[in-house]
Image (cartoon, rainbow, N blue to C red; front, side, top):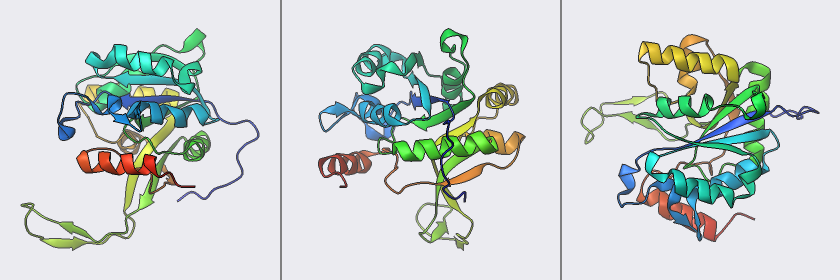
Length: 244
């Protein structure tokens, strides 16, 4: 894993692409995750706060579900991140399609940024420091992700009811977001993946498949993804009792 180092005197400049276009089927209900209220504000608003405060984030693109575009634009306009927001665009059928839409959204004033940082909008507790660290690592190495070593014993099951084997967890990491990349080669990888019909659920898998190794940057346990009702309740409790 990459170790923390002194940040560069001039921080790298990244476009953050917040992916908020999922259908939220595991939560049920009629309101998708980005618009569900946590502590009186939509989940997406909490995520935007973190990117507004990150010094390496120069601009933000939100990729939203087609039915939520107006609502997302309204909440983003009221966010501290409004000054960095350049576009809210509709997502695609799968994650890679949504990421492609965000990465290829027109750059403001023809000023393309050297980095693109892809983030699950449903991870509202990422810290600005973690965002900056992964962008700094990507600026040096081409690609970097936040990740944490797996600590639980890992079992394999073929039926979901019984175990078949215990896996060696050494060398295994849980990937988080943001995942940050040099923008131009990553955009080309998205187009290549489209041609190859390669649709991974993880953005770094594109870089690994076509270009090679991706730098690991220490993640944070609090940077979890709100996926189901239990995660949503945990997020509400965490916002009600923030860590000092």
